[in-house]
Amino acid sequence: MPYVKSIPIHSTVNRSIAYILNPEKTEDMVYTTALNCMANAKDAYNDMKMVYEYFSGKKYNAPPPIDGKGSVKAIHYIQSFDPNENITPEQAHRIAKAFARKTFGDDCQIVIATHLDKGHLHNHFILNSYSVSGKKFYDNQTTLKKVREYSDRVCLAFDIQPIKENRGQSKNIAYNEWKHKKRGTSWKQKIRLDIDRLVGSVKNIDELLCELELMGYSIKRGKYISIKAEEQQRFVRTKTLGEDYTAESLISRIRWRDVGADVTLNGEPAPIRSDYIKTIDEVTQLAAMGKKAQRKRDSNAPYSPANDMDIYKLSAQLTIINRDNIHSIGELEGKIENLKAEYETARKELNQLTAKQDNMDSLIEQAEHYFELADKPKLTLSEKLKLNICRQTINGSTIQSRADLERIKSVKQETDKKIEALKYSFENCKQLYEVYADIAHTYYDISSGDYILRLVAEEQQKRERKAQQNKKNKSI
Image (cartoon, rainbow, N blue to C red; front, side, top):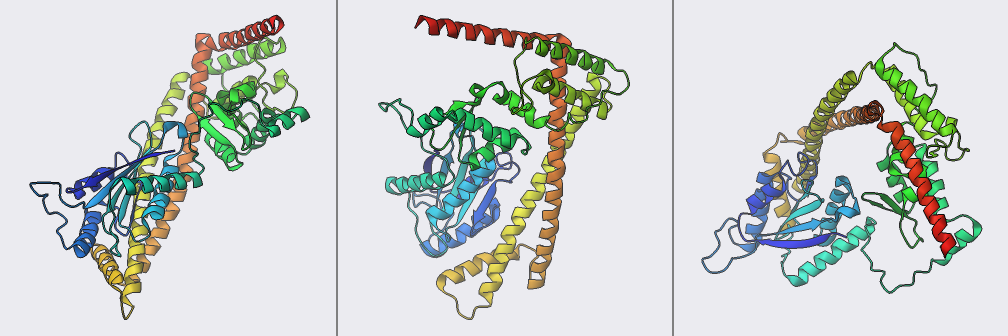
């Protein structure tokens, strides 16, 4: 559950807005939003200044008095997430927007930014001390307590649970878990079956964990991946589910799922290919003699060298090497560097287009409000103020008529199409980079002799642990 703190702003509101909208902290302004003002520092400040001065009768940029701090112009809230909550920047920003509307209302004036520059995600909010309808916001312990309660409620709606202490509680398992064990369908078996069903359709491990969360599971990501069903008492690490469910195995099962189909070992002779063919033969022998861990490619089929995940992965990697005509590790490293540059270029272009998309969304919304209010024969005080804010926004744009608004909407549609096409290209580039990087990592292990040694040592350690456990059980 995130922690919320507040900072009253008595002056330099412009500097506070500029700080939270720093492109380096917000992925080039991708994770920024505003309500009843624009999401750029200059316009947001002017919009807030107009509302504050209208309702307070005071100057927004008035210097503080010699004695005391003066009136609060705006309130800076910071909502910090625990790194163990493992939420994405997109999720954090959605939470921020929901929290702002739920806590302060649809007529508040607020700038929202999600920062990614530290070890944990955190949301920043600059809230004008007056809403566009004249409501006054205060910053004190009572209001902060209320704000924190709303933050908790919104986070619970996004399935971010508060940490509950279990001290003093019984360690007996729940009846439902006992029932599963009695039937031979334990929680672990249920988790295995659900993972196996999803592995065949997801694109990566992040999507796998997301799908599991949609099914009602709770997920924790740290050094190990831990999972818990809705009625299960305790989290279990996926590595305890078996060799096929470690993070490394799950990544391999997904990444190399379809690559090894119709494997061909044809291609021009090259050292990297010869080393792979030799290693596949050696691992196959280890599997046949029971001298390596039994990681199954298909968890529903019996284990055999033909159903060994390590052998399959090596064969799949060799398929890519042949398909892309890779002759050496140097050539592979060159492809990796080219993909990194292509990925970074695509990322920057995507961020720029997304920022442009957000600006157009905000401008279109303000223009639509302006024309709607301009057509009304009589306006309330709040509506007049909103009309002035909208007029100020569109005066600095190319929208002067409804025809201009339609033209901007057309440009927005074209931008949306470009973003979708770029996202597809971006994702393909990312996936190929991960495949090449995995091949490079494997080949370095093969070249140094560590690959076979690691497989043998892994199985030996596993047997030693099992022998120690059996010895311990006999002594009890």
